[in-house]
Length: 111
Length: 110
Image 1: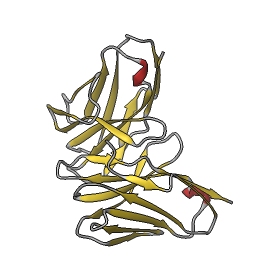
Image 2: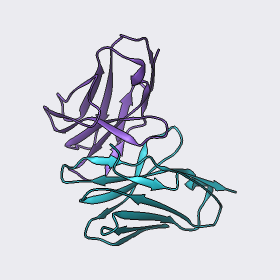
Image 3: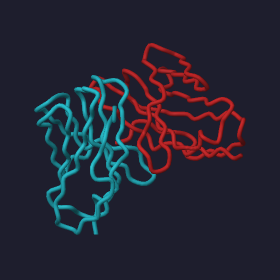
Image 4: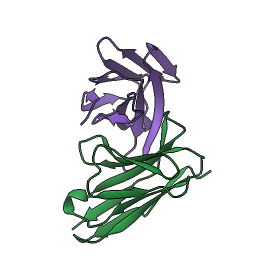
């Protein structure tokens, strides 16, 4: 099993550009999450999903959109990237509200 | 907003010594979880302790939870170089979301 995978691993964007981060899990988990991690801080929840076709806002949702069209995939979109969105993005999944399994992260730089 | 606050922010010890990290939180929780993050990698779940539990063990790890003080501690015994990492506590409330602390950076010196 691959667990949780994220695409891409690295990306550099210019201010105003858009992009989509893809997260995939093969553990049949209902719950999926998108976090961002900034230096010296813990993870902050952007959006999450408790099942296919459902999404909800987390702590820092502004500037991001998500979609969960298939149970195994959770997409994070940036419509108009800003330098404040420079961060490392982690996707995670869980069986209900138990331990979370993380992907390797996507390092995003917005110039 | 961050719920958990780890203490200390950084810890450097000799290989073989024990390492203790603490986590404090503010609101009622369903459970508290500890995760490890190696540099540049994703987080790995270590242990989960439920609000009605006081102590839990997993290999060289020992976690305690004091709900009256809203605090938890993670003890790593007989530390190894491979234990060098950042350690995060995360609390789960009735909304089932995890709220994370800023982490403790642990360095094990050979």
